[in-house]
Amino acid sequence: VPQKLQDGIVTCFFLDTATNIYEYLYIICNILRVGGVWVNVGPLQWHRNALIHVSADELRGLVESFGFEIVHWSIDLETVDYRYQDPTTTRWTKYEAFKPLRMVAIKRETTKGLRLPRFLQTRHESTTKPHSVTSNRSSSQVVIEELKE
Image (tube, rainbow, N blue to C red; front, side, top):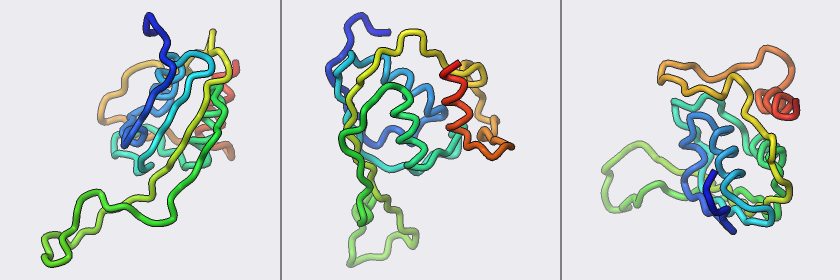
């Protein structure tokens, strides 16, 4: 935990780089003071090494479960190119674009005593497969329940 809590944090093209999204949320939560603002923009195209690939709806629930109030949440309707594609040349045949998630959240609750679930507390090697849930509950529901214990 930083010595001085922050008033705000901006994450851009960041969340989907997480191997463990719960670690990212835990760290962001512990960096901000109560009343601090978190602004995010970027895709949710989870990298291959991600343990859990949550949907935008699941991510929203997770953010709220970490004590944040969502004041703005939108996903653009139009795609945005990852790189400039010169229309006069055909350099690539692969089209890479995303629809950005735009979010503003305010930390409303203190997270004293919040801990990561046991299965997320250790560093995972690159050979680890994404976490799967065999019940009817989503992976985020399982973790939210463990966070409340």
